[in-house]
Image (cartoon, rainbow, N blue to C red; front, side, top):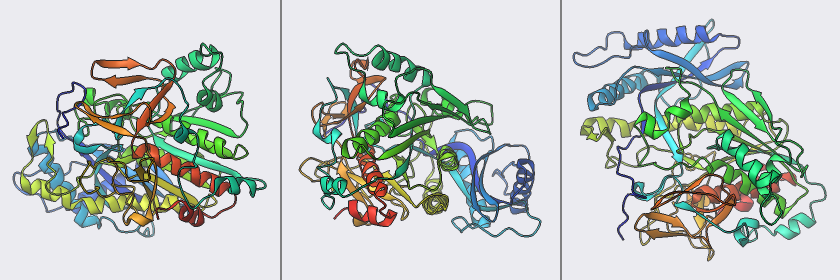
Length: 550
């Protein structure tokens, strides 16, 4: 089978991390100001670099670099976790990337990358725990760079009717949903956080006006938008204290058991530009494996699935869904945006209730040393590639620490975290192992299956080991000359407001529905199932065991 680069897009350079940037993970003491953090982190970097300057190589220019603290979370005893992003000013030429990698490699060895959060010495405002490249991430990637993120391109459909999109009865054989509902006298309230893309507010508002207020020709409002955003266009908006997130909430909700809010990422980079805008590949000239079509509906599609499945299974369950933008409109984000979004979501979620976090995304670390890196069309030399791949375990240990902290956050009545396993597999070949964060021990990875219960041809293994994860229907897809495309009959159906990528160009959504396929959409089925199980009083571990792969 030959699969060409998709939808008349020319192949573009591959990128795995943001050129020029270093991510420093630190523990900050209670009450320390950002200025104190920057000063002490800068001193520690300078001390680490003293005497290591090598002729012909660069040394981190922390004293003159742009710096910002992008995320914070409580780690106990008043101390907090922080991420300091330093732009060292390097370009994207091979020699610049090699210099950046050499710098990060030296700093890694100095600060013991992957170690647990260190204890702060008396009088210390900040202690560097680890160092990383600012890895890019995306909606769960497809095989060979032939898709924009999910396992297949979305396609238009005539309406919402499709059994798998409306019920969990075909998934999770250990759970008898009818019996569960019958024996659950008074379901509790559950929080669900979706870390993903977010539709532009202007698009959300315009399509809400068209699909809910003006209604469709048949006289019925779009049920998902209506349920999520209510019957009034007077949305409630609020700005986070640091100004990094704008949160929009619906009004006059027709279903009191569903609340919804979407938080847009307004954080800026060192040049004062919105990070979400700099991640648009056509502006920044970097992208992940030809990540070339707009997919801002991805997160709304996922959130809508969860709302729809929870309410269809047990309408008594009150579910509070918070969609947090960590990926730009092309489905691209970074470790920085992921940590910022997760911390904001945890800090703003109602405490004391069960929490489920859905990650229909993957961190784009290289799979092996043969996975070439290319910047501006020029391959890096082999030693640089080997150094980069040797950093993967340490970099992922940094991110793993954040997921462990989230999964054990004492503010909530236990936490379940799920993530899409990825869509790197191809028919007739053994499935590819789960990507990160699905492969983390603290995260339940999710693979996709077809209606017959067999693995979908695009799906990675659900987790490592496989039995630690879960599988769910991810939608059927077919291979075409232009890449994988969801089928209009077997793809999972959900809310879709923007335009569909087709060989002839972008085609607008007429009715607010689309069919999509990929592990990105199997994951929210597991998230919905966990939310329902947790509403009955089941523990996080028991709920995970109930939906786990056999």
